[in-house]
Image (cartoon, rainbow, N blue to C red; front, side):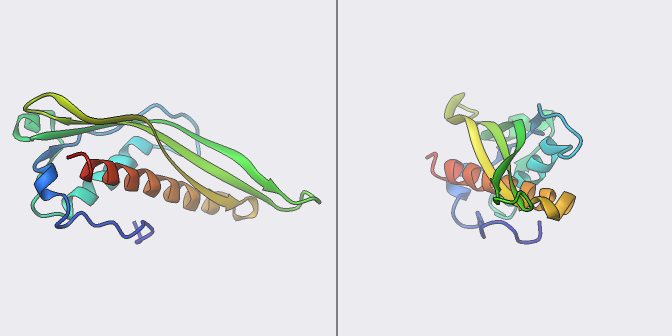
Length: 158
């Protein structure tokens, strides 16, 4: 993404804790026409971030799962959009986009769940007048926040 994240870089921080990781494609339980393929988008963000650390090998194919020591499984549960603010003359509205994911991070050799959270949430805001471009920018911010939370919890899991 165009550097819109919070500057996270796993290089040097996570290799000792993560090792080789299996990250299958995130399931997408959302529906709607504005936010499509969120499971694929979230997977791409997570995989790209872990691949920045050259000491981590990321596996995605089911046939490669046995090569990994950890597993990160995710589901995009929902995306919602709601009015955040409206000025008194109702001429300017600000909307909030919220993305909620369920994540499980597991140690494969022991089958121990290192962390699990069914409510990993990110949000972003946009003005109604910004239209689809504003919605997309807010969605990107929300996905980046979810990514940041996944990284924080994964790196701190050990």
